[in-house]
Length: 334
Image (cartoon, rainbow, N blue to C red; front, side):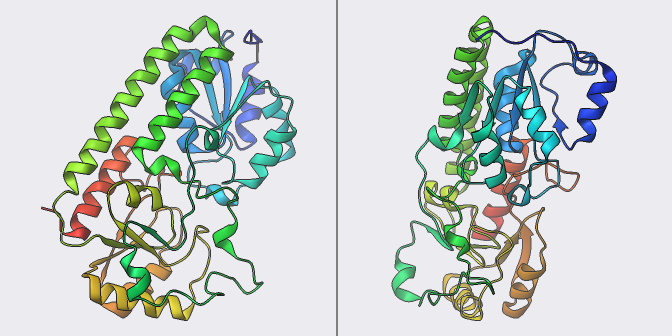
């Protein structure tokens, strides 16, 4: 595919920025401001996809994110203007199953290169409990059959068809996705294939180093169990032999049932849980209520769905290392 080279005025770029696109810094500020010709234009669905595009594409890509910093990606609704902008791009990078409006817009778009991260690694089913700790299924009565339903009877744990989409929180799976994205970029923009290959290799190496930091950092711990507000960390838990107990299901806005709260209180007592984790883009009210009722402390475990001023780091790697520090403290790692 030949990358379309087109001139965009500064006025037009200003208008695009006003449409709700977060423009990342994969190309230089000068070229971004001038609408420089010769860049490979990639629309990414939200931060973890945009981060991959930026790191792999380097100076050859111009990345825009459909999800603004600080916006909860599950809640995103694509506007007609964003759909039009999508159709002007060379490639779309998204994670099918996380943002239905994005899935629909990209599915209907004539865009030539559509990269679905969910097809680049194996997805698994995770609910309110995820990880290696199967013994909890026997020790603790799980929620009743309606525990994850809201007042409309909607089961949020099954919103994500095809499995849990939070693959980027496992550095190993994220590296698999990175390799697939790199190959897609090489095919779509062959003039810069060598650079995409090199950048992908560097990113994968960094992700493997992050994986090793988690393995080493969590090796000696007092407990395997951690409690979170929503079930985003199933892959991370499984990778490092932990058990995630989530207050809600895969949907961060789901209110827990009374039975689930009582169950978590029992789990915390029996398994030496010290901390209830909440996240930066969702209200901490439920976490603080549960912590107050059980005498536990609260802390942030960031699902890295977006970087804001409240994030404990400026990019994926910094926030993930902050997550490791938080987990080490909560699990009593030495």
